[in-house]
Each structure stands twice: as structure tokens, then as C-alpha cells.
Length: 262
Length: 173
Image (tube, rainbow over all chains, first blue to last red; front, side):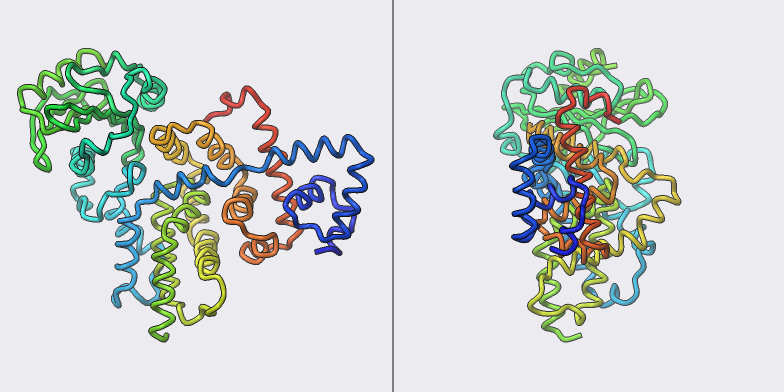
């Protein structure tokens, strides 16, 4: 280490190694002597010091890891049939079936169950995925979410930008429901936005939009995972609203949103 | 393989799944690829459990396996498929984090690091996030220590410039 650093290293590298505590005593002393004499070198040291990224933000990624799915992968990998020279490509199909993206973000709780590849290939795949994870919501999911609708304006902008729609708290407001979140996901390469609400009467409700480029379809009703769903397609985007809300009420909410969001 | 090394490696995998996934995400910028990398790492590590030297860092051994799978098996495929290595998905991932955490400065740090060239990004991650020494990073990356140093110096200079640039948003993808 020291022999490498005693050579005339470019200053940035020596300064970086100094900041990182990677210089040995002699090299450090030599550099400190130069720093004492050289204001420009000290200024450069300050610049490089500011360039070290903090580690804490990377903890956010740990929280995003889909831990249930990863644990399932580990168990699967440990089954005798899975051992042997398994190549990466051979795993892709399996992984794609298990993975189904999205929700890693919210708590890492999408289970491996999800969908079969056939289901994924069909149009309503995204509705099934949404229903899967929305069925895991409880009122406590949103316990710490801000109560002021305006607090969601920046998040709605992110979601709206992703979908090419202007979204603001007033646009997505629903009577009797509190806005609780706006998140942008991706489903099969397409942006998928979700706006979450909490109703004291009916519990969690989610309004989702996917830029899927499909043809217009009028509102239709279905049940998924024990929840009611109203879905439609308009202007190249798929919409759905889902919750344990009586059908008629849910259809009214869908009308309200369809008239404002487009 | 002996049962004890197998069990030790499996326990280590279980303990470090999140960290391995994070490493995969930082390398690939893609959740799906991070999933795949973890899965391949699990398979490979269990296959080779007998090669693990007890008393050495299991987490680093696992990360070295993930690195090698990425470098030798995945990265080239992604290039062939014409996918950029820093794809927009990472940005979506971090926007998701932003929505959840309401922590804009943290997300900005992630995006800036993700905007670095891959070699710098990986080295920054290993040394400044995972706490590798220069020597440990050089071993995992199979490069000279001087290369680690020059990548870190280059990354610090870029990140400092980004941090000082009020118009950074114009660089958004």
C-alpha cells in the first residue's frame, strides 16, 4: 500500500485514500505536510470530502427487498432437484413467474403464489397483481401516512409524470375517503401508478392506472381476492378501483375519477 | 459437501438475502435482475458450500459469487439485449422509496450514485456502503488497489460536482 502511494499519485487519489484512512503513517504525514502549505490542495480535499455518499440512504433498498420471495428462492434452491449446474438462463422463466415485480417496494410482501405465466400474459394480469397486494392492506398499513392531502402533491406529480397525466390532490379526491399514498410502480415494463385511500367505513381503497396502450373499454365489475373491482380503459390507459366497498358505491367512485382523470 | 458447511452457507444466505438483493439492484438497476442474481447466488453458493472457508467472512464470499455471476453471465446478456445498464427502472424503484420514505435527499443520493459508471458505482457501494477496505474491494473486484483508489477518487469528484450543481434535475432521464 505505502509503496503504491509514495509514488506520485494524482492528487485526487491520494486525497481520497487519505480521507478513507487508507494511507499508512508515512504517506499520511507527507500529505498532511503538503496540505499545510497548499490552500488549493486543501480546497480540493474539501471537494472530495463532500463527494463521499452517505451509506444510510442505501438502507432504503434493504427495506425494498422482496424478502418473502427471496426466502422462497432460497428454499427452492436448496431442494435437491434444484442443485447441480443450474445456469442463469434456465432460471429466468421460473424467476419471471415468481417475481412479478411491483410490490417489493411497499413491504416486500408479495408471495411467490401470485400468478402463473399464462395469467401474466393475458390482459388482466395487472389487475390480479394489484388485487394480490391490495388484499394485504389493513388500515394500519397507512397508520403513519400524512393526513393532509396536499402532502401528496409531489408524489402525485411523480406518478402523473410517469403516466403522462396531470394528477393533483383535488383531481383524485374522493368524498368520504382520505388520501393515503401515491406510488409509481412498473408492470411488465409499463408504468403503473397507485393512489391509496382509507375509508373509515370500508377500509383501504386503491385507485390504479397503467399506461398499457389498450383500446377503450367501458367500466366493468369483477371480484378479486374477496374485493370488489371496477375497471375500464380509456385513452391508452387501464384504470381500476378496488376495495371492500359495495358495488354501487364503488361504481360511483369510478365515475367520479373517470370524469376527472384523463 | 458436509452438512455443516451446507447449513452454515444456507444460514448465511438467509441472513444476507436483503444485502445481496441490494447489491444486485445497485449493479443492475433492475429489480427483476436483482431477484435473478440472488437466486443464482443461492444456487451457486449451496453447490459450492464445501469451498467456503470457515472463519472468513461469509457475506463477502456470497457477494463475490454474486459479482462473478453478474460479470460473467448476466451483464453480457443484458448488453446483447440492448438494455442499458442503468435503466429507468432503478429510478422508478427509488421514486417508490421516495413515496414511502418521504426522504428526498436520500433518494437523491441513490440516484446520483446510480448515475455513476458501473465500475465506479460498484466500488463506491462496496467501500462506502458495505464497508470494504480498499484491499477487500480489490480482491472481490479482481483489480489492483490503485484501480479501486482511482475509481473512488473519480466517483467522489463526480458526486461532489453533482451535489454542487443546482441544475441537476435537468439530467434526469
